[in-house]
Length: 164
Length: 373
Image (cartoon, each protein chain N blue to C red):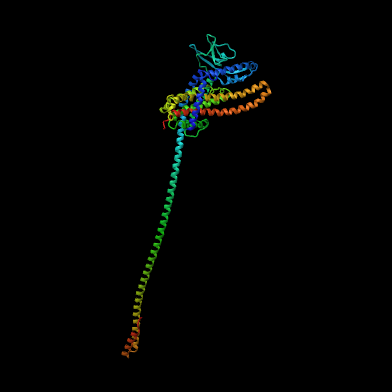
Protein backbone atom coordinates (compact mmCIF):
# COMPACT_ATOMS: atom_id res chain seq x y z
CA UNK A 1 0.00 0.00 0.00
CA UNK A 2 1.05 3.51 -0.61
CA UNK A 3 3.30 5.13 1.97
CA UNK A 4 1.54 8.47 2.33
CA UNK A 5 -1.94 7.14 1.62
CA UNK A 6 -2.46 4.43 4.20
CA UNK A 7 -6.21 4.13 3.82
CA UNK A 8 -9.21 5.11 5.87
CA UNK A 9 -9.73 1.66 7.39
CA UNK A 10 -6.44 1.94 9.28
CA UNK A 11 -7.56 5.27 10.78
CA UNK A 12 -10.78 3.69 12.02
CA UNK A 13 -8.93 0.71 13.50
CA UNK A 14 -6.30 2.91 15.10
CA UNK A 15 -8.83 5.30 16.64
CA UNK A 16 -10.79 2.40 18.02
CA UNK A 17 -7.77 0.50 19.32
CA UNK A 18 -6.16 3.58 20.82
CA UNK A 19 -9.35 4.62 22.60
CA UNK A 20 -9.73 1.14 24.04
CA UNK A 21 -6.09 1.02 25.13
CA UNK A 22 -6.29 4.52 26.59
CA UNK A 23 -9.48 3.73 28.49
CA UNK A 24 -8.32 0.39 29.86
CA UNK A 25 -4.84 1.60 30.80
CA UNK A 26 -6.12 4.82 32.35
CA UNK A 27 -8.62 2.95 34.47
CA UNK A 28 -6.86 -0.29 35.34
CA UNK A 29 -3.18 0.55 35.04
CA UNK A 30 -2.23 4.22 35.32
CA UNK A 31 -4.60 5.01 38.14
CA UNK A 32 -3.48 2.23 40.51
CA UNK A 33 0.16 2.67 39.48
CA UNK A 34 0.09 6.41 40.08
CA UNK A 35 -1.73 5.97 43.38
CA UNK A 36 0.80 3.38 44.52
CA UNK A 37 3.71 5.55 43.48
CA UNK A 38 2.24 8.53 45.28
CA UNK A 39 1.55 6.42 48.33
CA UNK A 40 5.07 5.05 48.35
CA UNK A 41 6.62 8.46 47.85
CA UNK A 42 4.50 9.82 50.67
CA UNK A 43 5.45 6.95 52.95
CA UNK A 44 9.14 7.41 52.14
CA UNK A 45 8.80 11.11 52.77
CA UNK A 46 7.06 10.41 56.05
CA UNK A 47 9.70 7.90 57.05
CA UNK A 48 12.49 10.35 56.27
CA UNK A 49 10.76 13.09 58.20
CA UNK A 50 10.19 10.71 61.11
CA UNK A 51 13.83 9.67 61.08
CA UNK A 52 14.84 13.32 61.10
CA UNK A 53 12.53 14.07 63.98
CA UNK A 54 13.70 11.01 65.87
CA UNK A 55 17.30 12.01 65.38
CA UNK A 56 16.55 15.44 66.74
CA UNK A 57 14.69 13.91 69.66
CA UNK A 58 17.59 11.60 70.32
CA UNK A 59 19.93 14.52 70.34
CA UNK A 60 17.70 16.34 72.78
CA UNK A 61 17.45 13.22 74.87
CA UNK A 62 21.20 12.89 74.88
CA UNK A 63 21.53 16.50 75.91
CA UNK A 64 18.97 15.94 78.64
CA UNK A 65 20.79 12.86 79.78
CA UNK A 66 24.05 14.72 79.97
CA UNK A 67 22.40 17.48 81.91
CA UNK A 68 20.82 14.95 84.23
CA UNK A 69 24.11 13.20 84.69
CA UNK A 70 25.85 16.44 85.42
CA UNK A 71 23.20 17.39 87.90
CA UNK A 72 23.42 14.00 89.52
CA UNK A 73 27.16 14.33 89.81
CA UNK A 74 26.82 17.78 91.29
CA UNK A 75 24.28 16.49 93.73
CA UNK A 76 26.46 13.57 94.66
CA UNK A 77 29.38 15.90 95.23
CA UNK A 78 27.20 18.15 97.33
CA UNK A 79 25.95 15.23 99.35
CA UNK A 80 29.46 13.95 99.85
CA UNK A 81 30.62 17.35 100.95
CA UNK A 82 27.73 17.60 103.34
CA UNK A 83 28.40 14.16 104.68
CA UNK A 84 32.03 14.94 105.22
CA UNK A 85 31.10 18.07 107.07
CA UNK A 86 28.62 16.22 109.21
CA UNK A 87 31.17 13.53 109.95
CA UNK A 88 33.69 16.10 111.02
CA UNK A 89 31.10 17.79 113.18
CA UNK A 90 30.16 14.54 114.80
CA UNK A 91 33.76 13.64 115.51
CA UNK A 92 34.35 17.08 116.90
CA UNK A 93 31.29 16.87 119.07
CA UNK A 94 32.20 13.40 120.25
CA UNK A 95 35.66 14.54 121.12
CA UNK A 96 34.31 17.45 123.07
CA UNK A 97 31.84 15.27 124.87
CA UNK A 98 34.50 12.71 125.68
CA UNK A 99 36.76 15.39 126.98
CA UNK A 100 34.02 16.82 129.14
CA UNK A 101 33.13 13.38 130.42
CA UNK A 102 36.72 12.60 131.20
CA UNK A 103 37.08 15.89 133.01
CA UNK A 104 33.94 15.12 134.97
CA UNK A 105 35.18 11.69 135.91
CA UNK A 106 38.50 13.05 136.98
CA UNK A 107 36.81 15.75 139.01
CA UNK A 108 34.52 13.38 140.80
CA UNK A 109 37.42 10.97 141.38
CA UNK A 110 39.40 13.81 142.89
CA UNK A 111 36.50 14.73 145.13
CA UNK A 112 36.08 11.18 146.30
CA UNK A 113 39.77 10.79 146.92
CA UNK A 114 39.63 13.99 148.95
CA UNK A 115 36.71 12.76 151.01
CA UNK A 116 38.29 9.33 151.48
CA UNK A 117 41.52 10.95 152.47
CA UNK A 118 39.78 13.20 154.95
CA UNK A 119 37.89 10.28 156.34
CA UNK A 120 41.09 8.25 156.62
CA UNK A 121 42.85 11.16 158.29
CA UNK A 122 40.13 11.53 160.83
CA UNK A 123 40.31 7.82 161.52
CA UNK A 124 44.04 7.92 161.73
CA UNK A 125 43.79 10.92 164.05
CA UNK A 126 41.33 9.08 166.24
CA UNK A 127 43.52 5.98 166.32
CA UNK A 128 46.56 8.06 167.01
CA UNK A 129 44.64 9.87 169.67
CA UNK A 130 43.64 6.51 171.19
CA UNK A 131 47.22 5.29 170.99
CA UNK A 132 48.41 8.54 172.40
CA UNK A 133 45.87 8.28 175.16
CA UNK A 134 47.00 4.74 175.85
CA UNK A 135 50.62 5.78 175.78
CA UNK A 136 49.82 8.74 177.86
CA UNK A 137 47.91 6.57 180.34
CA UNK A 138 50.99 4.28 180.51
CA UNK A 139 53.33 7.19 180.86
CA UNK A 140 51.03 8.74 183.40
CA UNK A 141 50.89 5.53 185.30
CA UNK A 142 54.67 5.48 185.20
CA UNK A 143 55.29 9.06 185.99
CA UNK A 144 52.36 10.08 188.02
CA UNK A 145 54.56 11.53 190.62
CA UNK A 146 55.37 14.53 188.76
CA UNK A 147 51.86 14.92 187.67
CA UNK A 148 51.74 18.54 187.08
CA UNK A 149 54.85 18.79 185.04
CA UNK A 150 53.98 15.71 183.07
CA UNK A 151 50.64 16.93 182.01
CA UNK A 152 52.15 20.24 181.01
CA UNK A 153 54.72 18.42 179.00
CA UNK A 154 52.15 16.23 177.21
CA UNK A 155 50.18 19.17 176.38
CA UNK A 156 53.24 20.76 174.98
CA UNK A 157 54.06 17.70 172.89
CA UNK A 158 50.60 17.42 171.57
CA UNK A 159 50.63 20.95 170.54
CA UNK A 160 53.90 20.50 168.77
CA UNK A 161 52.70 17.50 166.89
CA UNK A 162 50.70 19.12 164.20
CA UNK A 163 48.94 16.82 161.83
CA UNK A 164 49.68 18.08 158.53
CA UNK B 1 11.36 27.86 28.73
CA UNK B 2 13.46 29.38 25.95
CA UNK B 3 14.37 25.90 24.70
CA UNK B 4 10.75 24.88 24.55
CA UNK B 5 9.69 27.90 22.56
CA UNK B 6 12.61 27.35 20.21
CA UNK B 7 11.45 23.80 19.56
CA UNK B 8 7.90 24.96 18.97
CA UNK B 9 9.00 27.76 16.61
CA UNK B 10 11.05 25.32 14.55
CA UNK B 11 8.08 23.01 14.46
CA UNK B 12 5.80 25.74 13.20
CA UNK B 13 8.22 26.61 10.40
CA UNK B 14 8.67 22.98 9.45
CA UNK B 15 4.93 22.46 9.60
CA UNK B 16 4.20 25.33 7.25
CA UNK B 17 6.79 24.00 4.87
CA UNK B 18 5.24 20.55 4.95
CA UNK B 19 1.74 21.96 4.53
CA UNK B 20 2.85 23.66 1.33
CA UNK B 21 4.26 20.37 0.29
CA UNK B 22 0.88 18.75 0.81
CA UNK B 23 -1.06 21.65 -0.73
CA UNK B 24 0.77 21.22 -3.99
CA UNK B 25 0.24 17.58 -4.75
CA UNK B 26 0.72 18.40 -8.44
CA UNK B 27 4.40 18.93 -7.72
CA UNK B 28 4.77 15.50 -6.19
CA UNK B 29 2.71 14.02 -8.97
CA UNK B 30 4.96 15.57 -11.63
CA UNK B 31 8.08 14.29 -9.95
CA UNK B 32 6.53 10.92 -9.53
CA UNK B 33 5.68 10.61 -13.21
CA UNK B 34 9.18 11.61 -14.16
CA UNK B 35 10.55 8.88 -11.97
CA UNK B 36 8.17 6.36 -13.48
CA UNK B 37 9.44 7.26 -16.97
CA UNK B 38 13.03 6.76 -15.95
CA UNK B 39 12.29 3.52 -14.19
CA UNK B 40 10.35 2.28 -17.23
CA UNK B 41 13.59 1.83 -19.14
CA UNK B 42 15.32 0.22 -16.24
CA UNK B 43 12.37 -2.04 -15.72
CA UNK B 44 12.94 -3.99 -18.90
CA UNK B 45 16.48 -4.74 -17.83
CA UNK B 46 15.61 -5.40 -14.25
CA UNK B 47 12.82 -7.73 -15.23
CA UNK B 48 15.40 -10.42 -15.95
CA UNK B 49 16.83 -10.15 -12.46
CA UNK B 50 15.01 -11.84 -9.66
CA UNK B 51 15.51 -9.30 -6.96
CA UNK B 52 13.95 -5.82 -6.94
CA UNK B 53 15.24 -3.86 -3.97
CA UNK B 54 12.65 -1.06 -4.25
CA UNK B 55 9.73 -3.48 -4.41
CA UNK B 56 11.08 -5.49 -1.52
CA UNK B 57 11.52 -2.41 0.64
CA UNK B 58 8.11 -0.99 -0.26
CA UNK B 59 6.53 -4.34 0.46
CA UNK B 60 8.15 -4.44 3.89
CA UNK B 61 7.31 -0.93 5.04
CA UNK B 62 3.73 -0.74 3.76
CA UNK B 63 0.57 -2.45 4.85
CA UNK B 64 -0.59 -5.74 3.43
CA UNK B 65 -3.56 -8.12 3.51
CA UNK B 66 -1.29 -10.99 4.44
CA UNK B 67 1.52 -11.42 6.93
CA UNK B 68 4.39 -13.31 5.42
CA UNK B 69 6.19 -15.21 8.15
CA UNK B 70 8.86 -17.03 6.18
CA UNK B 71 9.67 -18.00 2.63
CA UNK B 72 11.40 -21.35 2.12
CA UNK B 73 12.48 -21.76 -1.47
CA UNK B 74 9.38 -21.03 -3.52
CA UNK B 75 7.03 -21.75 -0.67
CA UNK B 76 5.50 -18.82 1.20
CA UNK B 77 4.26 -19.34 4.74
CA UNK B 78 1.91 -16.47 5.42
CA UNK B 79 -1.01 -15.56 7.59
CA UNK B 80 -3.86 -14.59 5.29
CA UNK B 81 -5.91 -11.97 7.05
CA UNK B 82 -9.65 -11.36 6.77
CA UNK B 83 -10.79 -8.76 4.28
CA UNK B 84 -13.72 -6.66 5.43
CA UNK B 85 -15.27 -4.37 2.83
CA UNK B 86 -18.35 -2.22 2.74
CA UNK B 87 -19.17 -1.48 -0.85
CA UNK B 88 -22.32 -0.47 -2.68
CA UNK B 89 -24.48 -0.99 0.40
CA UNK B 90 -23.14 -4.46 1.17
CA UNK B 91 -20.63 -5.97 3.56
CA UNK B 92 -18.12 -8.44 2.17
CA UNK B 93 -15.99 -10.53 4.50
CA UNK B 94 -13.60 -13.10 3.03
CA UNK B 95 -10.11 -14.53 3.40
CA UNK B 96 -7.38 -12.61 1.63
CA UNK B 97 -5.83 -15.88 0.43
CA UNK B 98 -8.40 -15.71 -2.36
CA UNK B 99 -6.65 -12.59 -3.71
CA UNK B 100 -3.04 -13.77 -3.67
CA UNK B 101 -0.85 -15.87 -5.89
CA UNK B 102 -2.49 -15.57 -9.26
CA UNK B 103 -6.06 -15.95 -8.15
CA UNK B 104 -8.74 -14.42 -10.33
CA UNK B 105 -10.54 -11.44 -8.87
CA UNK B 106 -12.80 -12.56 -6.04
CA UNK B 107 -16.31 -11.02 -6.17
CA UNK B 108 -14.73 -8.54 -8.56
CA UNK B 109 -12.06 -7.46 -6.05
CA UNK B 110 -8.36 -7.72 -6.62
CA UNK B 111 -5.18 -6.19 -5.26
CA UNK B 112 -4.06 -3.18 -7.26
CA UNK B 113 -0.63 -3.72 -8.76
CA UNK B 114 0.29 -0.20 -9.79
CA UNK B 115 -0.63 3.47 -9.49
CA UNK B 116 -1.83 5.50 -6.54
CA UNK B 117 -3.77 2.60 -5.03
CA UNK B 118 -0.85 0.17 -5.19
CA UNK B 119 -1.41 -2.72 -2.84
CA UNK B 120 -4.98 -1.82 -1.96
CA UNK B 121 -8.07 -3.81 -2.75
CA UNK B 122 -9.83 -2.36 -5.80
CA UNK B 123 -12.63 -3.29 -8.16
CA UNK B 124 -13.31 -2.31 -11.74
CA UNK B 125 -16.13 0.15 -12.25
CA UNK B 126 -18.40 0.45 -15.29
CA UNK B 127 -15.71 2.28 -17.26
CA UNK B 128 -13.10 -0.36 -16.54
CA UNK B 129 -11.20 1.93 -14.13
CA UNK B 130 -9.92 0.55 -10.87
CA UNK B 131 -11.69 2.17 -7.91
CA UNK B 132 -11.46 1.68 -4.17
CA UNK B 133 -14.40 0.14 -2.34
CA UNK B 134 -16.50 2.57 -0.28
CA UNK B 135 -14.97 1.42 2.97
CA UNK B 136 -12.12 -0.97 3.55
CA UNK B 137 -11.81 -1.99 7.21
CA UNK B 138 -9.90 -5.19 6.56
CA UNK B 139 -7.78 -6.62 9.31
CA UNK B 140 -4.51 -5.93 7.56
CA UNK B 141 -1.01 -6.70 8.75
CA UNK B 142 -0.82 -3.36 10.52
CA UNK B 143 -4.25 -3.82 12.09
CA UNK B 144 -3.22 -7.23 13.41
CA UNK B 145 0.04 -5.76 14.69
CA UNK B 146 -1.97 -2.96 16.29
CA UNK B 147 -4.25 -5.47 18.00
CA UNK B 148 -1.29 -7.56 19.18
CA UNK B 149 0.66 -4.59 20.50
CA UNK B 150 -2.43 -3.11 22.16
CA UNK B 151 -3.12 -6.42 23.88
CA UNK B 152 0.53 -6.62 24.90
CA UNK B 153 0.44 -3.08 26.23
CA UNK B 154 -2.69 -3.78 28.25
CA UNK B 155 -1.26 -7.06 29.51
CA UNK B 156 2.08 -5.52 30.53
CA UNK B 157 0.67 -2.59 32.40
CA UNK B 158 -2.17 -4.41 34.08
CA UNK B 159 0.35 -6.93 35.41
CA UNK B 160 2.58 -4.04 36.50
CA UNK B 161 -0.40 -2.43 38.21
CA UNK B 162 -1.11 -5.75 39.91
CA UNK B 163 2.41 -6.01 41.26
CA UNK B 164 2.02 -2.46 42.58
CA UNK B 165 -1.08 -3.57 44.45
CA UNK B 166 0.59 -6.74 45.66
CA UNK B 167 3.81 -5.11 46.78
CA UNK B 168 2.21 -2.04 48.27
CA UNK B 169 4.77 0.35 49.70
CA UNK B 170 7.68 -1.94 48.83
CA UNK B 171 10.50 -1.58 46.33
CA UNK B 172 9.59 -2.54 42.74
CA UNK B 173 10.49 -5.95 41.40
CA UNK B 174 10.78 -7.62 38.00
CA UNK B 175 8.85 -6.03 35.15
CA UNK B 176 7.62 -3.43 37.57
CA UNK B 177 11.15 -2.21 38.28
CA UNK B 178 11.83 -2.00 34.55
CA UNK B 179 8.73 0.09 33.89
CA UNK B 180 8.87 2.29 36.97
CA UNK B 181 11.78 4.49 35.83
CA UNK B 182 10.02 5.03 32.50
CA UNK B 183 6.72 5.87 34.18
CA UNK B 184 8.50 8.24 36.55
CA UNK B 185 10.42 9.70 33.63
CA UNK B 186 7.18 10.52 31.82
CA UNK B 187 5.70 11.97 34.98
CA UNK B 188 8.68 13.86 36.41
CA UNK B 189 10.59 14.86 33.29
CA UNK B 190 7.83 15.28 30.73
CA UNK B 191 4.44 15.95 32.31
CA UNK B 192 5.29 18.01 35.38
CA UNK B 193 7.84 20.41 33.83
CA UNK B 194 5.74 20.95 30.70
CA UNK B 195 2.26 21.24 32.14
CA UNK B 196 2.89 22.24 35.73
CA UNK B 197 2.41 20.67 39.12
CA UNK B 198 -1.25 21.66 39.32
CA UNK B 199 -2.69 20.41 36.06
CA UNK B 200 -0.48 17.56 34.93
CA UNK B 201 -2.63 14.84 36.50
CA UNK B 202 -5.41 15.26 33.93
CA UNK B 203 -3.07 14.66 31.02
CA UNK B 204 -0.80 12.03 32.52
CA UNK B 205 -2.84 8.96 31.48
CA UNK B 206 -2.82 10.11 27.86
CA UNK B 207 0.88 10.98 27.92
CA UNK B 208 1.82 7.64 29.47
CA UNK B 209 -0.35 5.80 26.97
CA UNK B 210 1.13 7.50 23.89
CA UNK B 211 4.66 7.16 25.24
CA UNK B 212 4.41 3.43 25.79
CA UNK B 213 2.27 2.89 22.69
CA UNK B 214 4.85 4.56 20.48
CA UNK B 215 7.79 2.97 22.29
CA UNK B 216 6.38 -0.55 22.13
CA UNK B 217 5.42 -0.27 18.48
CA UNK B 218 8.77 1.27 17.57
CA UNK B 219 10.55 -1.61 19.26
CA UNK B 220 8.27 -4.22 17.73
CA UNK B 221 8.91 -2.64 14.34
CA UNK B 222 12.63 -3.36 14.75
CA UNK B 223 12.04 -7.07 15.42
CA UNK B 224 12.22 -8.54 11.93
CA UNK B 225 9.82 -11.46 12.33
CA UNK B 226 6.27 -12.17 13.53
CA UNK B 227 4.75 -10.68 15.69
CA UNK B 228 7.14 -7.79 15.12
CA UNK B 229 8.15 -6.37 11.82
CA UNK B 230 4.96 -4.50 11.05
CA UNK B 231 5.83 -0.90 10.32
CA UNK B 232 3.15 0.48 12.62
CA UNK B 233 4.65 3.76 13.81
CA UNK B 234 5.94 4.31 10.29
CA UNK B 235 2.34 4.36 9.09
CA UNK B 236 0.84 7.76 8.51
CA UNK B 237 -2.62 6.71 9.71
CA UNK B 238 -1.24 5.60 13.09
CA UNK B 239 0.86 8.70 13.69
CA UNK B 240 -1.96 10.83 12.29
CA UNK B 241 -4.48 9.47 14.77
CA UNK B 242 -2.02 9.95 17.65
CA UNK B 243 -1.41 13.54 16.55
CA UNK B 244 -5.14 14.07 16.13
CA UNK B 245 -5.68 13.05 19.75
CA UNK B 246 -3.05 15.57 20.84
CA UNK B 247 -4.71 18.24 18.68
CA UNK B 248 -8.19 17.52 20.04
CA UNK B 249 -7.02 17.49 23.65
CA UNK B 250 -5.01 20.69 23.18
CA UNK B 251 -7.92 22.49 21.52
CA UNK B 252 -10.53 21.29 23.98
CA UNK B 253 -8.45 22.19 27.03
CA UNK B 254 -7.36 25.59 25.67
CA UNK B 255 -8.21 28.29 28.18
CA UNK B 256 -8.91 31.99 27.72
CA UNK B 257 -5.23 32.83 27.79
CA UNK B 258 -4.47 30.31 25.03
CA UNK B 259 -7.10 31.67 22.67
CA UNK B 260 -6.11 35.22 23.48
CA UNK B 261 -2.56 34.36 22.47
CA UNK B 262 -3.79 33.01 19.17
CA UNK B 263 -6.13 35.87 18.28
CA UNK B 264 -4.21 38.74 19.80
CA UNK B 265 -0.72 37.68 20.74
CA UNK B 266 0.65 40.06 23.38
CA UNK B 267 4.06 41.60 22.85
CA UNK B 268 3.71 41.66 19.07
CA UNK B 269 3.75 45.04 17.21
CA UNK B 270 0.23 46.16 16.24
CA UNK B 271 1.05 46.37 12.55
CA UNK B 272 1.47 42.61 12.45
CA UNK B 273 -2.16 42.24 13.50
CA UNK B 274 -3.85 45.18 11.74
CA UNK B 275 -4.96 45.80 9.03
CA UNK B 276 -3.57 42.47 7.78
CA UNK B 277 -3.95 39.96 10.65
CA UNK B 278 -0.63 38.28 9.90
CA UNK B 279 0.12 37.03 13.41
CA UNK B 280 -3.35 35.57 14.04
CA UNK B 281 -3.12 33.75 10.72
CA UNK B 282 0.28 32.33 11.61
CA UNK B 283 -0.96 31.38 15.07
CA UNK B 284 -4.08 29.68 13.75
CA UNK B 285 -2.00 27.89 11.16
CA UNK B 286 0.32 26.91 13.99
CA UNK B 287 -2.54 25.19 15.80
CA UNK B 288 -2.71 22.74 12.92
CA UNK B 289 0.93 22.55 11.96
CA UNK B 290 1.99 21.47 15.43
CA UNK B 291 0.10 18.16 15.41
CA UNK B 292 0.83 17.83 11.70
CA UNK B 293 4.54 17.96 12.43
CA UNK B 294 4.11 15.45 15.24
CA UNK B 295 2.51 13.10 12.76
CA UNK B 296 5.17 13.55 10.08
CA UNK B 297 8.16 13.45 12.42
CA UNK B 298 7.33 10.08 13.95
CA UNK B 299 6.26 8.63 10.60
CA UNK B 300 9.35 9.83 8.74
CA UNK B 301 11.85 8.84 11.43
CA UNK B 302 10.61 5.30 11.76
CA UNK B 303 10.00 4.80 8.06
CA UNK B 304 13.43 6.14 7.17
CA UNK B 305 15.10 3.85 9.68
CA UNK B 306 13.35 0.83 8.25
CA UNK B 307 14.13 1.81 4.67
CA UNK B 308 17.81 2.31 5.41
CA UNK B 309 18.11 -1.04 7.19
CA UNK B 310 16.29 -2.81 4.36
CA UNK B 311 18.49 -0.96 1.90
CA UNK B 312 21.63 -2.33 3.48
CA UNK B 313 20.20 -5.83 3.47
CA UNK B 314 19.21 -5.37 -0.19
CA UNK B 315 22.80 -4.49 -1.07
CA UNK B 316 23.81 -8.06 -0.29
CA UNK B 317 21.37 -9.44 -2.85
CA UNK B 318 22.10 -6.78 -5.45
CA UNK B 319 25.82 -7.52 -5.32
CA UNK B 320 25.15 -11.21 -4.94
CA UNK B 321 23.25 -11.16 -8.24
CA UNK B 322 26.32 -9.67 -9.95
CA UNK B 323 28.79 -12.10 -8.45
CA UNK B 324 28.29 -14.57 -5.68
CA UNK B 325 31.62 -13.83 -3.99
CA UNK B 326 30.93 -10.10 -4.16
CA UNK B 327 27.66 -10.80 -2.40
CA UNK B 328 29.45 -12.55 0.46
CA UNK B 329 32.00 -9.76 0.68
CA UNK B 330 29.35 -7.07 0.80
CA UNK B 331 27.33 -9.02 3.33
CA UNK B 332 30.03 -8.51 5.95
CA UNK B 333 29.90 -4.76 5.54
CA UNK B 334 26.13 -4.74 5.17
CA UNK B 335 25.47 -6.79 8.26
CA UNK B 336 27.88 -4.58 10.18
CA UNK B 337 26.01 -1.48 9.10
CA UNK B 338 22.68 -3.13 9.77
CA UNK B 339 23.71 -3.96 13.32
CA UNK B 340 24.85 -0.39 13.81
CA UNK B 341 21.58 0.91 12.39
CA UNK B 342 19.58 -1.47 14.54
CA UNK B 343 21.23 0.06 17.59
CA UNK B 344 20.54 3.49 16.16
CA UNK B 345 16.92 2.48 15.64
CA UNK B 346 16.74 1.34 19.23
CA UNK B 347 17.84 4.81 20.25
CA UNK B 348 15.45 6.42 17.78
CA UNK B 349 12.60 4.31 19.15
CA UNK B 350 13.12 5.88 22.57
CA UNK B 351 13.86 9.36 21.27
CA UNK B 352 10.79 9.51 19.07
CA UNK B 353 8.52 8.22 21.82
CA UNK B 354 10.05 10.85 24.10
CA UNK B 355 9.78 13.68 21.58
CA UNK B 356 6.18 12.92 20.67
CA UNK B 357 5.18 12.74 24.32
CA UNK B 358 7.20 15.80 25.31
CA UNK B 359 5.77 17.96 22.54
CA UNK B 360 2.23 16.80 23.29
CA UNK B 361 2.83 17.71 26.92
CA UNK B 362 4.22 21.11 25.90
CA UNK B 363 1.15 21.81 23.78
CA UNK B 364 -1.10 20.86 26.69
CA UNK B 365 1.01 23.08 28.90
CA UNK B 366 0.62 25.99 26.49
CA UNK B 367 -3.13 25.43 26.26
CA UNK B 368 -3.57 25.49 30.02
CA UNK B 369 -0.99 28.13 30.94
CA UNK B 370 -2.37 30.95 33.04
CA UNK B 371 -1.66 34.56 32.13
CA UNK B 372 1.46 35.77 33.93
CA UNK B 373 2.02 39.23 32.50
